[in-house]
Length: 84
Length: 325
Image 1 (cartoon, one colour):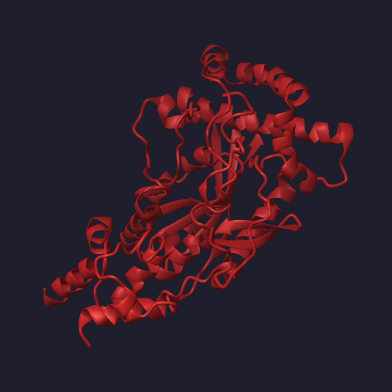
Image 2: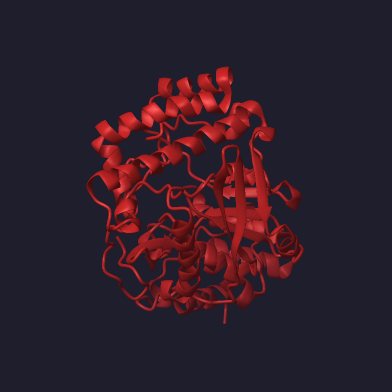
């Protein structure tokens, strides 16, 4: 499964977004606040989920902040780290 | 630095149902009067002024009595009338002394206040696990003075702390004119500071948090019983511990002499790896914290400094434990 599709499915499963389908998640919408509506504790879970399912560790805020903006930015970050 | 300020919360309604504020209540000249008393006559002179100021507030400030009553009516349910007024006086006096002591440490130096720590060896062992350390306390005693006894841990200290606009009471390092000895993480910063907190724990650093005040959204709170009635406390620290493996050290300080404090390691809470973020998953750990806090209130009834209605009922629970606001 392509990274973006897998990421969406993982978010739905792990962050209890059962009301959504992968198709309904906008690739460019903000993950937090308006958009997907995740909050600060979801951010912690998201860091865990990305490491668990993609083997990529988000180490600190400097790395995490730009990566955790949207599905597209997180996908790009995962791709970049996996290729490094 | 009047005794009705600083930790006496304004009770103003905040976003996400936050019914407390850390904003100082006293005016600047009141604070300066106490600082001047300390400089001229030391701690005792400031205490002397304090007795009169506290008496004034207890007798003439209905608001001060109301704020103290939330806790006192649960800690001393049988007390009424004059007896409750006496409890109120003792509670506000104790707060005033703590605020003066904090200023004394800054103005006259740390040698002006003795701090004894129970659990030093255990803390060193926990530090050496290398997974970071979450030090959780509450608005009791004087945590700022207590922090000065933790230098031996020899690790960077990060403090989750919000300072409101308009705060005029000073921390001890501000009195001393030195740099802040810890890094402050703003809970109202990006993602509530959670990524910063994760980052410092991954570096093996120390993260200090308050476990007794609701912060963040309703979904970050869990309900526990405290003094016989439910309160909401944040569970993000337990989630951090579950994610990083960092132990949570519950510690409390109390004033145990005219110029001395004692610092006790009350509990070590180990949170296993837990996936998900449902409040109920973290409730057992929050309950443990609450039990330690209740023990503290039994032992030191006048050193509990939450002057807002912690027991104000929250909205009904949903699948996550709380309804979204």
